Length: 303
Image (tube, rainbow, N blue to C red):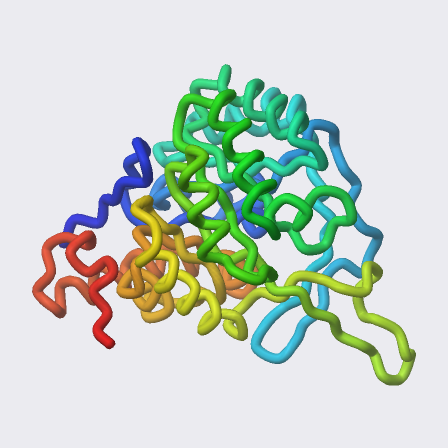
């Protein structure tokens, strides 16, 4: 069996497969199906300082080769997470990465400060790229300067690994990646969902209550792979690839393009065991190609 361990900043993962924020809740639900300690890490739902109900239903709609969601960052809030959700994650032998989102820089700071006191939190993923909330969301992630300001503020409040989650719904994602790198991010994760909409032609209404939502699933994978490749050649920090990863072949595309780890999201709704199958499939691929260490294939795609 090949070495599957990778480093994301100061955080060492036993393997490169993480669960994507919003698609795995807070981890405990999936533990009824399998031992989540087999994962490289769990990324929680994005947390805001106060709890949020999110958008009214319908919040999800299927599309060709994908899914649209407009959840609206519904979550239990930071205090309830720390008291009721974090103890379970702390007890698991896997990395706990908490996703945070805010409508102001001060909210990001307060979240980071609270989580800095929690020894069971290994890293933060900073969501500056949610496309389906009116406040915050893309306001921070769409431009170089505000993206950098959020990361710098969190960097001053949180001493461990910080991952900046980037949006594809921007003019130049490479420039934003450079900005968050310059302001203290230890890694970047990409891509968040693409903005999309589905219309019911008989009812003549949008299928989502919010109208627009975030497109995820296989439809966005080629876009994500291309963006990972570009950013891997522009910054010197680790990249975590996200977007339409359903099997080991999908994950390997991201690794070869330059990602050091991957997040599995929409595929978990179709097959909760998908992350474990991807871990096994990556190992089989490495054995088949005579590779003893996963790090040896990161970014080696040829043009």
